[in-house]
Image (cartoon, helix red, strand yellow):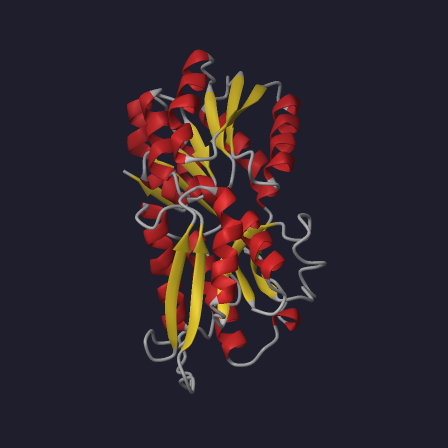
Length: 323
């Protein structure tokens, strides 16, 4: 059961709004494959957000989607095609996709769904004044990484080693790799990175974890990895490794625990920006928003399968316990 507020600013969503004069095209530039479970959820949450903003598909908007299928090199071509079709709004969920779209246009509005630290990676000069043609939702997932380690230490107080599954194609992951190494060193825990970018990396990553088994695994926050939830979670289950991630979807798939922003809430909230833009607002004038709350989700079934005792204090403060 959820016991905390999801995100500031959702009050007022779902109120009746006037219909748009003509339907407008909104295109999602997605990272994974359209059939991936995370991709399906992403589209569902977008549609729920559009509905909460009073935008009716086929009447106010036409929602279209293009997918990179995990191939980051495809974003440049996909972005060029999307921009050439002149949609009203483009939705992006990765830094690489955002950069590709911004390289192709400074006119078509872009909404982030959300993106990690867009200021640090150079997408916008500031959250309060994005200034260009991009706005939306942002996260600072670097803050999440130390918390994931701390939670694993609650579960395994004698943890001596830790592996991080990290996507080297994500520019912001270099900073998260460094933050993880620093926090692990502070705690006296050995740590190393296992690269994983594309669906085909599952066998290589699994072999690396099998050859050098860690005491636990952290999945660093990354939209590309979110699209590979099932494969990553299965590796953890197969190797009997306690695994912590930044969104609940991993826990639903079998990971031990998650700590992070409520993913659905941010995606639904992002449609507020779509509505404002379709109503005539300039993205440059719409401050970028961040989550104001986080959730802890624990999988008690996985804990039993791994032979891990979950501390009562952790169970007491968890927002969701899957059992």
